[in-house]
Image (cartoon, rainbow, N blue to C red; front, side):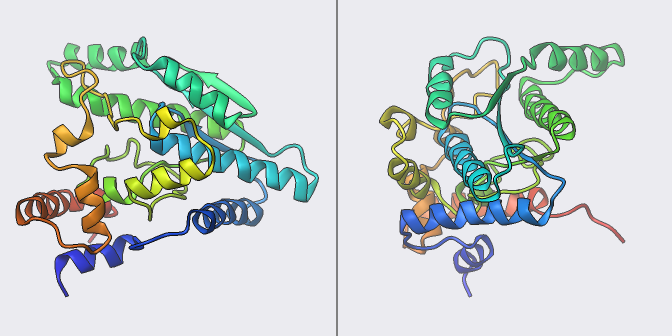
Length: 268
């Protein structure tokens, strides 16, 4: 079996999907988990303004509405978190996402002060972090806030990770990867767009260029320029299609170099 086939099998990506079926599968997945964990009453998503969190949040909103109707229990809640670092340049998109997903509650927590405070504490001990490491600090601070609110709200932290990020390791270990449940993990980027389109997401949101925007020295740098390969090619790889050898080598190198991100801590 080729490495490509092994990766596809491991990540569970389908070569083709029917959006309506995938939407139902994701909602049922979330709903059944909550029903099997009766102490959990809310779904919590950090909303960034990008495609992944927009889809995840919309699926959560639909799930909670279905649960409230089916169980006649208004204590089920969908909570969206806005976690900017200072002033976010695409804040208008974020507000458009909030209007699209219609959460029950929205909490706005600016993480900049916390990140800079941590950096200042490290500096006092003689440790100077780079801009890249600061980016990881931002992702981990966001996850910390999500879990703090989840603890108060009897909530489940819902991840936005998907197969195209997973295969390349394009996520922060114990940051945006630190979640309780990931409903869109088997989808690639173009499949995410298909689901958003089916859910009547505004076009400018589901066609938005993906960017993590974690580094201060490279603001608004898109994911593809960092990865060195386009999501369209990554998606084709994950769908089992033949791609050019250079792109295949980039994807497989990224996958092998980031194995540690996808594995549990090593034990004896």
